[in-house]
Structure formats: C-alpha cells, structure tokens
Length: 107
View (cartoon, rainbow, N blue to C red):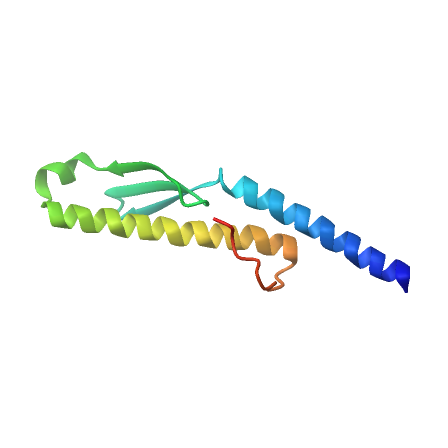
C-alpha cells in the first residue's frame, strides 16, 4: 500500500509541474478580440497583458469618441473571453478535463 501512495504522490507532483509549465507558457500565448466588424482588434496574452490595439483608420474619421471607446472596450472583453477559453482548454488537456478545485489561473 505504501508504494501505491508513493506512486499517487509522484503522479500528483508531475501533474503539478506540467500545470505550472503550461501556465508559464500561457503568459506568451496571444489571442485576439475584435469588435465593430473587425474595425477594432486587441491582441493580448493569456496572462491578460494587452500587446496591441489596432483601430481601423476609417473609425478615426467617421466615429465619435464614445462609439470608439465602446468598440475598444468590446474588443478587450472579447480578447479576455478568448484568453480564458484558451487557458481552460490547455489546462484541461493536462488534467483530462477534471475540475480540480483551486486550479484557477494565478494571473
């Protein structure tokens, strides 16, 4: 029985190491969020660091400030959802889809 518990502990440690490595890698994975028919695009990492904001030049001429702010907010929110989805998919691949309490991202 002792060796069975030892194997479980070893597997748990390996799982923890793979999860930590994947979380570190997610800090560099980029996702996009879009709004306004792709007129505004936000690129961010799965660590929620915004890397780029692209605003189509036509918006700078025709759009009012409030509409542009709304589009940027919508694109950021879309990017956040995409980052969460990507992170969940990658971490679920490691855990076999198990919902492990406390597994939330450290970011």
